[in-house]
Structures are given as C-alpha cells and as structure tokens.
Image 1 (cartoon, rainbow, N blue to C red):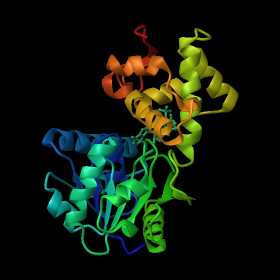
Image 2: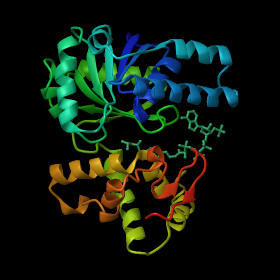
Image 3: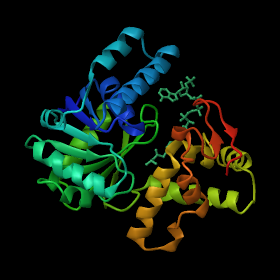
Image 4: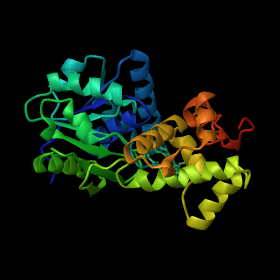
Length: 299
Ligand code: 3HC
C-alpha cells in the first residue's frame, strides 16, 4: 500500500537532486517540486531528468507517454517559501557544505508546514546538527540515496538524536513508494554505513596511484574482476565527484579525529586543479561523454 506522502519538494537540482526528484515522480508517482537557487541549475536538472527518462524509453522500460507524464509531475521553481510550504516531505540534496546547509535548514524550517518531514540526502554531515537549525528536530531524518538514484536500489534511513519514530516511518515508507530497499542507521554516525566502508576503499585506490603501484586502469580492472564491483574505485570516484569525496573525508577527520581518514594528497591536488571527475569533464579519466572513459594524462 502506498504511503500518505503525495507532495514532495526536492531542494537542489544537481547530480543527486535531479535523480531523487525523478524517482519521486517516476516510481512513487508523487507530485514533485524541484527547487534550486539559479534558473540555469534548474534547467540543467530538468535536462538531466529528460535524458535519464530517454534512457528508460530507449530500453523499453518506460513508454514515451509515461515519460511525458513523469516529466509533467516535476515542477521546477526558484521560490523556496512556496515550494516548501506545500510539501508533506522535503528532501534536501544541496551542496555538501555544513554552513550552507545549516542556513538552508533554518530558512526551510520557517516555511515548513506543521508536521511535515524534512529529510536530508547528506552523505556525511550530522543529521542531529542539521536538525538543530530547525524548529522541529523531531521531524528531521537522514534519507541517503546512492548515485545514480534512478538505478541504485538502496536508501539509508538515519535517525538523528531527536528524530521521532514517526519521522523514521514516513521516510521509510516514502523510500518504499520509490521502490527502494532501506536500512536503518540507529545512530547518527558520520558516513552512516556505506560511505564509512566506501571512502576508505576509494582513498586506498588513490594512494595506489600516487605511490606508483599501478595505473588507474589496472587498479579499476583489478577491483572489478577481483571483487566483482560494477565499476572500479577510481572511475567511481570520478562518478561521485572528487570534491564530494574529499568533503566526506574532511568530515570524517573532524568527527572521528582519526588520521586513518586523512584524504590522499593526490585527491586534494586534483580538486584544487578542478579535476573533479565526470562533472568537470576530467578526473582520473577523461569524460568526453558519460560512456567514454580514457585514462587522463593530467594526474
Ligand atoms: N538514468 C537511467 N538509466 C541509466 C542512467 C540514468 N541516470 N545511467 C545509466 N543508465 C542505464 C543505461 O541506460 C544502461 O542501460 P542498459 O544496460 O539497459 O543499456 C545501464 O544503466 C548501464 O549504463 P552504462 O552502460 O552507461 O554504464 P555502466 O554499465 O557503467 O552502468 C552504473 C552505470 C549503473 C552506474 C554502474 O556502473 C554502477 O552500478 N556503478 C556503481 C555505482 C555506485 O557504486 N554508486 C554508489 C556511489 S556512492 C554514493 O552515491 C554515495 C554518495 O554519498 C557518495
């Protein structure tokens, strides 16, 4: 049975936000408002949704008419007050910057309808901290999707220190509407479950590059064939964004105060150089188009 959630607002039309909005409209049939701070970000988000829907149509998983219907359920806007005020569930997928997010949570809280749920797609920032910027921390939880949200079947549901049981249930039920499996993080711990495991593995892969142990292609090939990963760790880093991965490592360093989470100097350097991965056109690989992956020589 579908949950009571029907109207959802997604904050942020970027890599994760557009995909979450699409899943809300496509799999759950929700009425979705997609908000960002600039028209060009919204336009790009809507374009990414169109491109993704076209992929589903091309492989016969969705007919053209249905794709149009999905698109018509996503309403882009720049008006935060209106977008937030009408939502039963707000899913925040803004940039992973604690300062920016705290200010956003304060503003969202002013417009949130009584009893509405505010869920964060943060990959590492404390849910308890984000909730502390709102008037109703009991209505705030983590709802962590994986990239690309249209395909990845998992959502981590995260309980903050003050999250109510009913909020956990709203988020779980919404994830189920979206066709996702859920796991519950009972404690609000940095990186939750998956990123705690993943970030260490990705960091080791970058150390293998900087120590000259193997080339990126061989590291990726080894992990794909040796561990059966669908994509090697360096390609995955490009896919996630080196800046995003670096941000997560920094949160781990701060929160756990343990040097084992120190990001590799190579990743720091690449971020400084704007080699962020797929989104900037180059990282460990050259990304002429999403499916072309030639090792770059710019490391
Ligand atoms: N929308 C719709 N369909 C899509 C799509 C999208 N955005 N992206 C890819 N597809 C489809 C393609 O059309 C293709 O369909 P087909 O097999 O029927 O032809 C299929 O997915 C495979 O796509 P590609 O051939 O382009 O590329 P890949 O074979 O490399 O698959 C992938 C892409 C599904 C992303 C796969 O490589 C994969 O599972 N990679 C691992 C992803 C992963 O680990 N994600 C988690 C990252 S961690 C995270 O997000 C947490 C964060 O906090 C950091």
